[in-house]
Image (tube, rainbow, N blue to C red; front, side):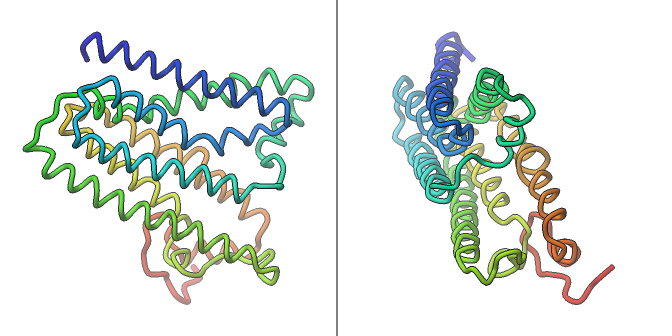
Length: 265
């Protein structure tokens, strides 16, 4: 990276951390650290548009910037709607109970600034999309791959969230395992969709010289599979829903795949 790109990257880090500090201040007032989840997607939107605005402003770069805007707005609106009136997420409630009165200050760096730094790292493909030099020949192929992955991922993520929300809205489904629609073929189709979206953004970065930002989709995939997504959620579901063990035996963990009907070993 040249010095201009490095400077823009550092300003992006400042934007990400400043956003998280503002959200943290509101979370202290509302005693709800889960506000960070609602604004996570908007952080990528801010960084993508900032880096595009200070770069050469290629029209081709607007495609992924608009796509991440659609993704970020949908995610933030969906999480805000889903959690409206529900109070603080139980993950943060458990942290609050462990740390007592000191949680407010501790959450600044252990929740908000940490997520701000991760957001900045995952957004690196957009640094190159905004400030890199476009190779039109590469854009034809990698741009097409990026659009395809984004469309597949956005469809899976949006559809899975809608199906799960509709399932939970029926009181008769309380305590039951969601195994309908996309959830019949994958235990986490929404996470698989999000992974596809971020690999799509990486494809867009390659024609701008961003091949080296491979760590960004790898990091997002690792977080969704091993940290805050699949692993954490599966542990809770196995403990709270006895039927979930059977669901695990017959359903693919991540990649949508026909279920193993009748298999119990």
